[in-house]
Image (cartoon, rainbow, N blue to C red):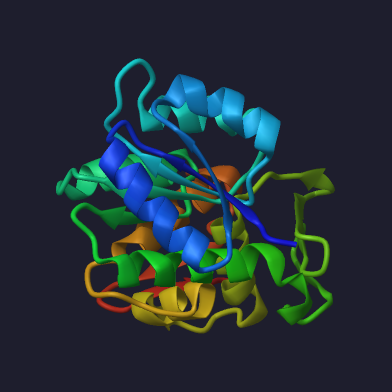
Length: 227
């Protein structure tokens, strides 16, 4: 059965172009012209992946993520014309899984779609088991993460990143390696997405002055999980 992808963009040309490439790859496609319409379409179609423009009238991409995340944890790839790194990081911190900067090549877009879809639907590729470190528990088969038996919601990208770090505690990983391990590929300029996901994870596992510091920054290299 074909998986459904929702394309949200206020420019009809972009919607049509992306839809053509997705349908050529075998996906079913639904579209929306703004964030408010997208909320309705998402509730009806329950897509497996959302390609989301950031700058839209009525309800922009950032606000859509805030509202949609209250209902579902669908993987999201941002389509952004903004070139400032801070603008991209905002979307990642809100829970987006990845981003592609406009104008983009169809080949790169489809490669990133396939990578996110593989993580979303190919659960059987993950080695089963449960990882325990202190009061943290990561259930690799059921995608469950808990702290002292309290369940913590993670996006798929956050879960995959934490799984890599927790399965090799105390090992320093380069950003490029983490990107390759979690997304199956790396593109120049995308390694900073790892920083945004790490920031989100740190907030969710309640790191602070009086809390355990689980994820350590290895300056000039990347990150490691302190067992």
